[in-house]
Length: 160
Image 1 (tube, rainbow, N blue to C red):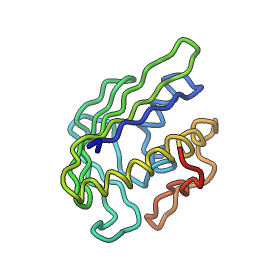
Image 2 (image 1 turned 45 degrees about the vertical axis):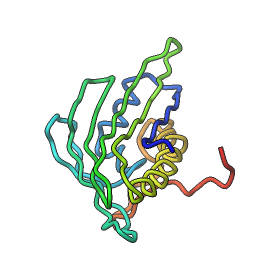
Image 3 (image 1 turned 180 degrees about the vertical axis):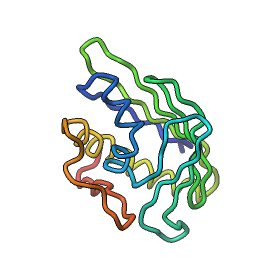
C-alpha cells in the first residue's frame, strides 16, 4: 500500500493564477476549507471543516517553505495524522500549469484510513473545486460557508 498522496493535474491557466489560488486565503476557502492562511514561512494557520469521528474539524498547519510561484510546503496536523503537504507548480509551454500535490507521513491504521479519505477529497478538489475557482475571473461561484463546513465537492459516482 502506498503510504502517501501524490496527485497531479494540469490547468489551462498561467502559473501566477494557480499560485494565487494556492496562496490566497479567500481562494483556499472557496476550493479547500475556511482558513486564516497567510503565505509566509513559519506562519501557523488552521483550516476548519465539519467534525467527524476521531477528528474535531480543525487542521492545524504551518507554512514550512514558500518559493513563489513554484513550491510551497505545509505541515498538516488533524485527527490521527501529522504529515507534510507539498505543492509544486510547473509552467508548461502552452501557458498552462501542472500542479502536483504530495502529502507524506501517514503511519499506522489511522493514518492509512485518513490517507484514503484525504486522497479522495483532494482528488475531487483538484479536479472540480480548484478549476471552478480558476475559471471564474472574479472569484468563486459562491461565498465559502460561514458555519465552518467545508465546500468540498461531493464524491464522484464514477471511479477513476
